[in-house]
Length: 94
Image (cartoon, rainbow, N blue to C red):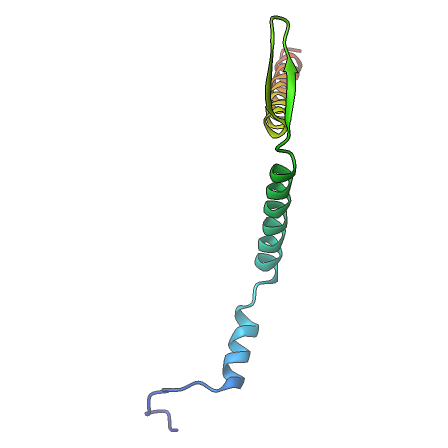
């Protein structure tokens, strides 16, 4: 082929070289980690579907264990954020 002729096919060597130049190991690493975390969360949900009794002061109910875990996690995150904001507000006043 000369330079005037359009390049119609690509060789295996040029494809491999292009793959080496465009390969992004950080992106693939992140995708693998996200996939593993997603798989872990899916298994966590599937394995915690057993019903449990939740007692309140005025009564009780039965719910799936995963809902109790997720509600506790959410409440912990919200209370942690509120506590850190309160601490920052008090430190700023000094």
